[in-house]
Length: 126
Image (cartoon, rainbow, N blue to C red; front, side):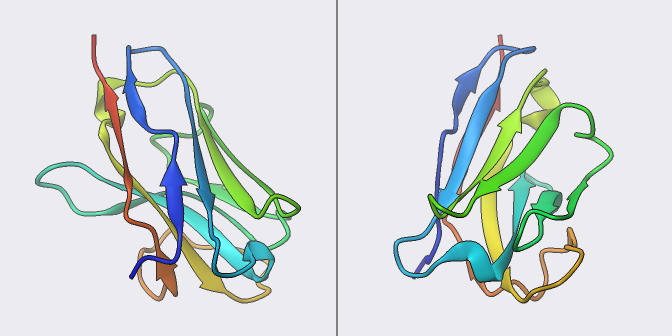
């Protein structure tokens, strides 16, 4: 059973933008680092970006640096991924995952995550 819910995916043209959201109705996210991951057909799941419990530190995959921004609004119990300058190579199912702990840094490994969402499809195509 999925504890997180993603939204905001869709079809967009190259160069366009999307904002993904990750929230939970079952628990508050302010005690969790949250990461965004993606998986394209035939490829392994890869880390895209992550943010610590208080937003004090973020991390990005090299492929998205300068184009994607992760941020959180703990008052709304939501973590966002703003995706700009989208490329066809960004096409994938995007997942958010939460890892409990008050760490100073987060990591982009899909391992040791406590909760996952069921994913939202992002398709970049003309």
